[in-house]
Amino acid sequence: SALDRWAAGDFTMQRRALLEARVDDRVFLALNDVTVHKGIEINLIRIEAFVDGQSAGRFDADGVIVSTPTGSTGYALSLGGPIVHPDVRAIVFMPLNPHSLFNRPIVLPEQSHIALRLPSASAILTCDGQQTYAL
Image (cartoon, rainbow, N blue to C red; front, side, top):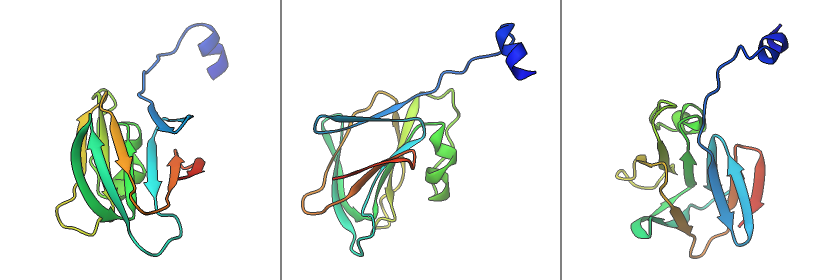
């Protein structure tokens, strides 16, 4: 059985990246993706994005998704994002349904720090489609 093989040391281990999302003093972890989205609101939300302290743009969208290589074949892929091989040390940052032709997914180094500012909107943080937190 699989448990017998595992007990005998007959297995391989794969390392996978985790995302860490911080809101105030709360910390959330995700294996696949972290999404900031408008929830049930009708209007788009204005998002100001920063990567490693530098402005990465301001846009109106339903939200943003940040995915690991593991998560790149899930929600991000269904929205037109790239498939990232699990051995590539990168993350994907992409707007959700942006109101612009020029906002496209960006592949960033794994250690990138992404900060978001929502000047006048409420939103929801979701990690791996499980944990949710109102912003």
